Image (cartoon, rainbow, N blue to C red; front, side, top):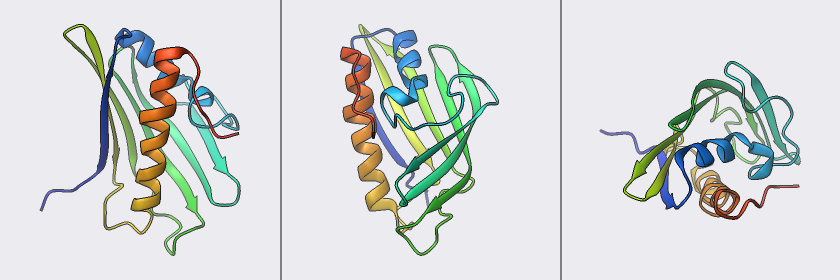
Length: 146
Protein backbone atom coordinates (compact mmCIF):
# COMPACT_ATOMS: atom_id res chain seq x y z
CA UNK A 1 0.00 0.00 0.00
CA UNK A 2 1.41 3.37 -1.02
CA UNK A 3 1.70 6.11 1.60
CA UNK A 4 -0.48 9.12 1.01
CA UNK A 5 1.74 11.91 2.28
CA UNK A 6 0.19 15.37 2.09
CA UNK A 7 1.33 17.14 -1.07
CA UNK A 8 0.30 20.22 -3.00
CA UNK A 9 1.69 21.95 -6.10
CA UNK A 10 1.38 25.34 -7.74
CA UNK A 11 3.13 27.34 -10.47
CA UNK A 12 4.21 30.98 -10.51
CA UNK A 13 5.89 33.38 -12.93
CA UNK A 14 8.90 34.00 -10.66
CA UNK A 15 12.29 32.30 -11.08
CA UNK A 16 13.32 29.16 -9.17
CA UNK A 17 15.73 31.29 -7.10
CA UNK A 18 12.96 33.73 -6.16
CA UNK A 19 10.80 30.79 -5.05
CA UNK A 20 13.71 29.32 -3.08
CA UNK A 21 14.37 32.66 -1.36
CA UNK A 22 10.69 33.03 -0.41
CA UNK A 23 10.53 29.51 1.06
CA UNK A 24 13.50 30.34 3.29
CA UNK A 25 11.80 33.54 4.47
CA UNK A 26 9.70 31.40 6.81
CA UNK A 27 8.67 34.40 8.95
CA UNK A 28 7.21 35.98 5.81
CA UNK A 29 4.70 33.17 5.14
CA UNK A 30 4.38 30.68 8.06
CA UNK A 31 4.79 32.59 11.32
CA UNK A 32 6.31 35.85 12.43
CA UNK A 33 7.15 34.09 15.73
CA UNK A 34 9.67 31.64 14.24
CA UNK A 35 12.78 31.37 16.42
CA UNK A 36 16.17 30.58 14.87
CA UNK A 37 17.82 30.58 11.45
CA UNK A 38 15.61 29.43 8.58
CA UNK A 39 18.13 29.66 5.75
CA UNK A 40 21.28 27.85 6.91
CA UNK A 41 22.00 24.18 6.27
CA UNK A 42 22.04 22.27 9.57
CA UNK A 43 20.32 25.06 11.49
CA UNK A 44 17.20 24.40 13.54
CA UNK A 45 14.25 26.70 14.00
CA UNK A 46 11.18 26.57 16.22
CA UNK A 47 7.55 27.17 15.34
CA UNK A 48 4.81 27.65 17.89
CA UNK A 49 1.18 28.59 17.59
CA UNK A 50 -0.51 29.43 20.89
CA UNK A 51 -0.76 26.26 22.99
CA UNK A 52 -1.87 24.14 20.01
CA UNK A 53 1.34 23.37 18.15
CA UNK A 54 5.08 23.51 18.75
CA UNK A 55 7.72 22.00 16.50
CA UNK A 56 11.45 22.09 15.82
CA UNK A 57 12.59 21.84 12.21
CA UNK A 58 16.21 21.09 11.28
CA UNK A 59 17.27 22.21 7.81
CA UNK A 60 18.50 18.95 6.27
CA UNK A 61 18.94 20.13 2.69
CA UNK A 62 19.28 23.49 0.91
CA UNK A 63 19.90 23.32 -2.82
CA UNK A 64 19.52 26.87 -4.20
CA UNK A 65 16.73 27.18 -6.74
CA UNK A 66 15.83 23.47 -6.47
CA UNK A 67 15.07 21.96 -3.06
CA UNK A 68 14.60 22.62 0.65
CA UNK A 69 14.14 19.84 3.24
CA UNK A 70 13.22 20.25 6.89
CA UNK A 71 13.39 17.31 9.29
CA UNK A 72 10.96 17.67 12.18
CA UNK A 73 12.95 16.47 15.15
CA UNK A 74 10.40 17.33 17.81
CA UNK A 75 6.76 18.30 17.74
CA UNK A 76 3.94 18.70 20.18
CA UNK A 77 0.43 18.87 18.74
CA UNK A 78 -1.84 19.56 21.70
CA UNK A 79 -5.10 19.12 19.77
CA UNK A 80 -4.73 15.35 19.13
CA UNK A 81 -4.19 12.27 21.32
CA UNK A 82 -0.74 11.41 19.94
CA UNK A 83 0.95 14.76 20.40
CA UNK A 84 4.11 13.48 18.66
CA UNK A 85 2.56 12.60 15.27
CA UNK A 86 4.96 14.91 13.41
CA UNK A 87 8.14 13.61 15.09
CA UNK A 88 10.56 12.24 12.51
CA UNK A 89 8.61 13.52 9.50
CA UNK A 90 10.09 15.59 6.67
CA UNK A 91 8.83 18.71 4.92
CA UNK A 92 10.12 18.94 1.34
CA UNK A 93 9.91 21.83 -1.12
CA UNK A 94 10.86 20.85 -4.69
CA UNK A 95 11.32 23.63 -7.24
CA UNK A 96 11.43 23.10 -11.00
CA UNK A 97 11.25 25.32 -14.07
CA UNK A 98 8.38 24.21 -16.32
CA UNK A 99 8.31 26.24 -19.52
CA UNK A 100 7.98 29.90 -18.57
CA UNK A 101 6.80 29.16 -15.02
CA UNK A 102 8.30 27.77 -11.84
CA UNK A 103 6.54 24.85 -10.17
CA UNK A 104 6.69 24.35 -6.42
CA UNK A 105 5.79 20.91 -5.08
CA UNK A 106 5.35 20.78 -1.30
CA UNK A 107 5.20 17.42 0.46
CA UNK A 108 5.02 16.68 4.17
CA UNK A 109 6.38 13.12 4.17
CA UNK A 110 4.85 11.24 7.07
CA UNK A 111 1.72 13.39 7.30
CA UNK A 112 -0.76 10.74 6.19
CA UNK A 113 -4.55 10.31 6.42
CA UNK A 114 -4.12 7.80 9.27
CA UNK A 115 -2.91 10.65 11.50
CA UNK A 116 -5.56 12.23 13.70
CA UNK A 117 -4.20 15.67 12.81
CA UNK A 118 -4.29 15.03 9.04
CA UNK A 119 -7.45 17.07 8.36
CA UNK A 120 -6.42 20.08 10.42
CA UNK A 121 -2.73 19.89 9.48
CA UNK A 122 -3.29 19.42 5.75
CA UNK A 123 -5.80 22.27 5.82
CA UNK A 124 -3.30 24.54 7.56
CA UNK A 125 -0.48 23.56 5.17
CA UNK A 126 -2.89 24.13 2.27
CA UNK A 127 -3.42 27.71 3.43
CA UNK A 128 0.21 28.46 4.29
CA UNK A 129 1.57 27.00 1.06
CA UNK A 130 -1.13 27.75 -1.55
CA UNK A 131 -2.18 31.13 -0.15
CA UNK A 132 0.49 32.67 2.09
CA UNK A 133 3.71 31.37 0.47
CA UNK A 134 2.30 31.77 -3.03
CA UNK A 135 1.36 35.36 -2.20
CA UNK A 136 4.83 36.04 -0.77
CA UNK A 137 6.41 34.70 -3.97
CA UNK A 138 4.09 36.57 -6.34
CA UNK A 139 3.61 39.88 -4.49
CA UNK A 140 6.32 40.06 -1.84
CA UNK A 141 3.73 39.86 0.95
CA UNK A 142 2.65 36.65 2.68
CA UNK A 143 0.01 35.98 5.34
CA UNK A 144 1.96 34.50 8.26
CA UNK A 145 0.52 33.75 11.69
CA UNK A 146 1.15 36.62 14.09
